[in-house]
Image (cartoon, rainbow, N blue to C red; front, side, top):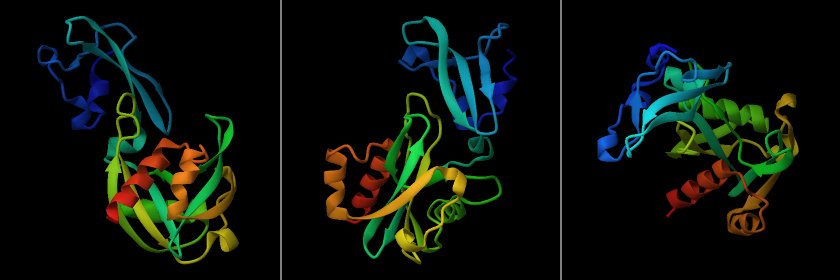
Length: 210
């Protein structure tokens, strides 16, 4: 595949690297079809780059790019707060085929800011309006595969979602619960919260209060 696909990616994802310095060096694709964009839909690009490894050998390396990143966007995860308690959602995840306790999250849509996306996703997943929203950090959910960053936002809610929340029907959300911050460690230890994105966001939230 020609190397035009690289031009679609943000400049930060086209940094060539240098195998001689111990980095994985990004090379231009050859004439075969085994490199470039292997799959694309409205949400993601699955890219297989041609690379040179530090030992001098060449091969392919996969990475996943969310389409929002092509326009400079990123993911957002919210830490919802109602009367000093954290709100968790019970959501059915196709990938695990299981119900999970998580924080609400979503990807930034074109034409809106990261903060506006946090406000929008709060309404969509919790069904209540945010009263105050502020950014507390960012992280990468899987640096070995995913290219994008996820912004973390604390959200003070205007109403109790456990009694008045109305999430979008197609989100797979069952119900909500409020948890005191001191109880979160026990939920994690028991494996009730196992979503890496939620765990990272809760860590950043706790760290922001120190």
